[in-house]
Amino acid sequence: MLDFDALWDYNQPEETEQKFISLLMQAEDSGNIGYLAELLTQIARSQGLQAKCRIAHETLDRAERLLKEDLVVARIRYFLERGRVFNSSSRSMDAIPLFLNAWELGIQSSEDYYAVDAAHMLGIVESTPEKRMEWNLKALDYAEKSPKASHWLGSLYNNIGWAQVENGKLEEALELFKRALEFRKVQGTPNSVFIAKWSVAKVLRLMGQVDESIAIQMELLAETEQTSEPDGYVYEEVAECLLLLNRSEEAQQYFSFCYDRLILDNFLATKDPERIVRIKELAGRSV
Image (cartoon, rainbow, N blue to C red; front, side):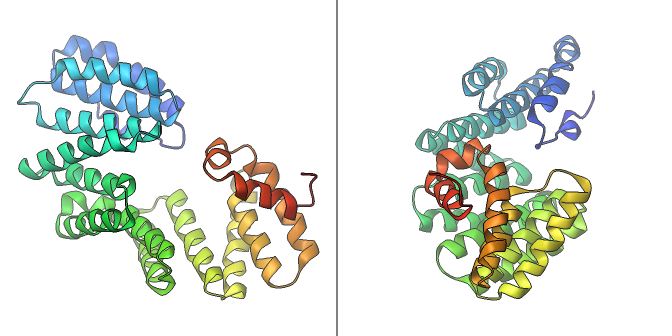
């Protein structure tokens, strides 16, 4: 049977969903219930990433009906994806017990990869910064000890880094983002390397090292202009740096570029509307 996990493109969930759906008939005919149940959980994940939460829950209902006690990995993945869909629909309190189930079953069955996945999700959805940090550190400990879970190190360095930013511990955050960058370079995933560089540069700006920060952001901007659409978040950081350097006219131009792109980001507009308003004002657009 085809390794459907190799088909994942998290930046293209709609295309990924269609690839997974194309395997459904073969999976159903195979008689391999565990494979079919796991495939359905990943179809649901791709649907959740498209904000198709109702459909994702229906897909997970179908997977749930297939689950048996001995299908350990399928059960863990079901808990993970049901939790992720709840989290995507702003129901984090419903997600927490599901991630706890995935964590416990993963530890019991030595499925370290999925156990760390669950712990890292708990590090995102828990209700307080202290609980989130506790789970992130627990996940990091397992990931550093288990070769099966080492894939998660980049994400954990990143998540813990942002938690440290939230706590005002910028030097600790910078060190974690640098570790994430080195890990991503070894992994060889260009988009993850890009994000890690951006994170390093942002923290440098927050630490007052503006010249170093803008140099990195301008490198990233050159990359995107050559290979894809320019990134709104890079434009935002360039603009913020220029503002701190008292280059207000240039900053306004970059805030304008930023606004044109981030206004299309529904997630940001919903999560942080005040940020969009600020960008719009600094861009000199009518409010």
